[in-house]
Structures are given as structure tokens and as C-alpha cells.
Amino acid sequence: MARRPPVPDPRATARTWPQRCGRSIGPAVRAAAGLVAERKLNVLAMLMLAVNLAGIAASFLTGDPRAMIAKDSAVSSVIAFAILGSVVLRRPLMSAGLKPFMTKGEPRRTAAWDRLSTASPRFRRLELLFSLVWGMTLLAECAARLAGAYLLPVATMVWLGTVLTLGAIALAIVAGGAAAGPIQKMIDAEAAAS
Image (cartoon, rainbow, N blue to C red):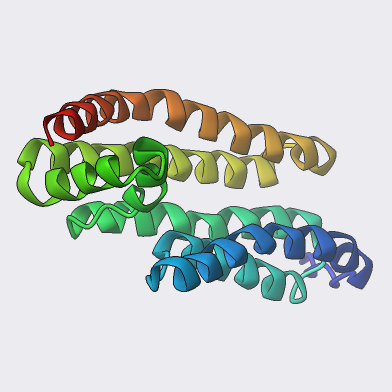
């Protein structure tokens, strides 16, 4: 006998809707702040906002808990593919997130970043490496979450999804240090020389 697809449960969508909206506040604020303060669009923040909004919209289309978990993985993989695409295009998307941490908002350090980013091939390679590490780590997390959506009990995936995300972020921070450490030293040297 053929299995019929589950009927969407509006209560499942209603329970996750406030959480999904809450996740959109940070990226929306960062995107708006970047436009106001620097008159520049923060592409990474806009991408995260778009992914969150797509997740909210998709939540209303399905009520199956496994499909919702799988959908979360598929939607968040857009971020991973965007980061990896930026590496291929040699316009590292994660630099938008890394630059404020490395320059600490100091004009001399920001100028050093800008000079290195345009004039130093090694610096550009390190920027690309940092984005590559983040893109690959996030893609692996999405694949693990997608597999877990259908191989593990839903109750397990409810908490494990968060653990996988936090673990991927921690891994990307540590592995990204292979690029961030040398970037920091180059900025320190360039800022000191100016």
C-alpha cells in the first residue's frame, strides 16, 4: 500500500514561527546598520536574512517534522554554497564578517586591511582560505543535518540540529584560524608600518 504524504500541521508551523522570526532580527539590524553607517550593503547579513525569510515561508508549506528539519538543512545550505561560490569568484564572502574582528574598528587597522586586500596576493589567498573553511564546514553540517532528519528520531534531531550547528561554528572558528592567524599578523605589521 502506498504511503500518503503527511498533511501539514499548522500547529508545528505556529510553534516554530516566532523562533524563525527571531533569527532574522540580527541579520536585518546588521544589514540596516551597514547601509546607514557605511552606505554599503552587508552582503553576508542580507544573505542570512534572505535564508531566514525563505525558511519562514517554507515552514508554512509543510507540517511534517522530518521535512521541516530537512528543509532547514536545505535552506541553510544556500549560505554554504554562496560562501563557496564567492571563493570560486575570488570575492570571499566571509571577509565581511572577518574584517570587523580583525580591524577592531580602528581606522589604521581598517586602512591596513584595505591595502593588504588590494595589494597582497598572500592576504587574498588567506581571505579565500578562510571563506573556503567556513563554506565547507557549513556544507558538511547541512549534509549531516539532512541525513539525521531521516535517519534519527525527530525528538533527537530537535536538539541535535542545534548541537550540529554550534559544533560546525566552533570547528570553522578553530579551522579558520589557519587563515585568520596569519591575516591578523599581516594587519598588525602593516598597521605598525604606516
